[in-house]
Amino acid sequence: MPALRIVQNGKPRAAIVLPGDSSQPLRDAAADLVRVIAKMSGARLPIASESSRTRKPARILLGPSLAQKAGVSLEAIGPEGYRLVRAGDDLVIAGATDEATAHGVYGFLQDVLGVRWLRPGELWEIVPRRRSIAIASLDAAVNPSFLFRVYSGALDPRWLARNRLTYDASRLPCYGFGHNLKQIIKPSVYGKDHPEYFAEINGKRFVPESDSAESSQPCFTNPDVIRITAEAARAFFDSNPQRTTFSLCTNDNMDYCTCKKCSALDAPARTWRNEPVHSDSYWHYVSEVAKEVAKTHPDRYLGCYAYWGTDSIPRKIRRLPDNVSIAHTQDTSQHFDPAYRRIDRDILRRWAKVAAHVSKYDYYGLGWLTPRCFPSLVAGDLRFCHRLGLAGFYCEAYPYWAITGPMVWLGAQLMWNAKTDWRALMDEFMRAAFGPAAPYMKRFYATLERIWTRPRQSMWFQGLDKMRYETATVSPRRMEQAWRLLEQASARASGDHAKRVAYIRNGFEMSYLLATIFAGAERLAEQRINRKADIERILSGSVDVLSRLSQPTDSFEKHLRDDPAYAHVYFRPPRLPHKLETWRQEIGELISLAMRRALIWAKGHLHPREIRAFEEDAAARYRSARAARELGLTDLPVR
Image (cartoon, rainbow, N blue to C red; front, side, top):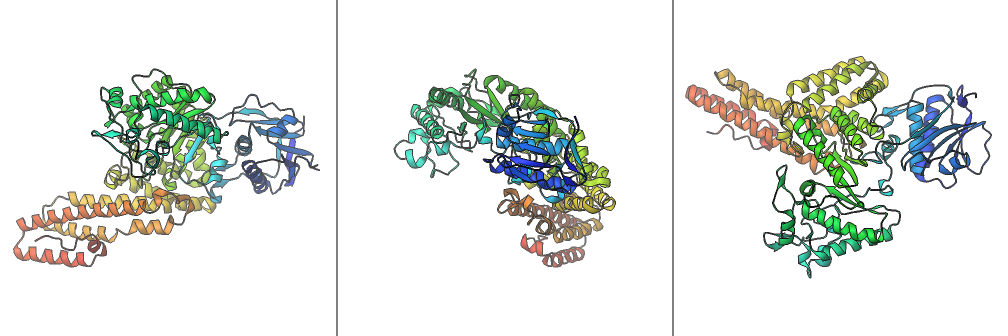
């Protein structure tokens, strides 16, 4: 059979055919197919409707209805999978839904034509150039490793779609999570007349002030609470027949009920990673609600987080009802610690025996401003989750693109196919993005990973919103190495490769400044003092550090503030300004300590005239430093 020619010598030889009732995801994918092939070859394929006649000798048929008419079976694919089939003069791309068909379009562009979307933005779209596109034979049934694959964190929806992440997970079985109990047992409805529906804490029922307050769980053993919850689930499913799952996820707090009945279930008391465990009372509540809902809606699910006070296995429930879907929350970034990783994996294995449907909820980015880069841990974890048979994967990505971009892209690829060689994917990213500078950029990211994964004891969310702990994980020497590697990469790249290196360098600059300025302040606070030159070095170094305190903010304003890729909560007020101000205050404390030590040494070793000269010099230099005035350090040194 001769090859099916889609483009020949820059001329279109095929038309794209869409069903008349195509939804927006499929229309967007078809538009991308036209645009990318035009960028690749110069040929712009026409889009025809199902009812129209096309003059092109070949057709690309999109969608399940056209696949059926072409005699292509979709039996071998799941809800998110697709078929790619050469059928005579037609290329059929079809999934069970328009969303799945769109995955097929992007699968064809990536796996057959070699297109890549490494990061949001046109600069990061990699399109090989070829004047002709021909398909000899093709017959593939493609299913993802995880039923749903979700990144949250204000990511570009087009980038997510192009990397075959889930469009609308709510239409899929077992997906439906989010802190929701406050929307079921509402203080505005039940608080006045039924305080017994809310948590008893220290012998008193605690009713939240408003329906939106993230405080207090319901009383999980109250039979009315169980009844009301089951009724809420039924009403939700009746009003939303397209939705598969109703959330029973706890409110985002640790204010659990300690009434006699709840405490009896949770007894004897235990802790998990230094937090009290309330798994037995919570999962009792979930189990009872699930049994009731199954009587009227046997094909629907209840989504639950195994999170914070409820992530431990319940001791008094051997098996949850099969309509319960669990998302177990874990911080994979801590898996550099073998003991921590072993515990995380063991509890997932145990949950897989207790619940019929288990997924993972992870956190690749939560606002760390210093390197938190761990692609090898991402790869190992996704392979493990796939082998265990987890249903889906949800991740709060919130990228610091300069640091975590390759890791976020890698995670998307492995969520689709967990068996892919992750090292080969990382090499592909570096070659495609940076060309001749790839060896240096590969070493840059390897250096960032070594900074994060240095041997130490793991701790959940290590460093979150605490700049001193965050900077404590950083090796200043390695940060300097990383910066030099970016400079070397810049010298070897040109064209788009150079623009991408510059994008990374500009984005990384804030992190580099935060870490290295902090390290300079720490060195001053720890400076050995043996002679007068040492205290003078501390004074000069302190003034120099203070003069640089605005540099991270200036770098953010210059490079990141207006970049839409960074338009998420961790790079916007109030979080980012608060973190930068915390960093400044911690610098101030270190400088204050350094100067106190210098003055103490001076008073014990210098002539009064020299002491007075040192104090006057310090006072004058501090008064001239804007940061010293802002931090209230102008009174240093203390007399």
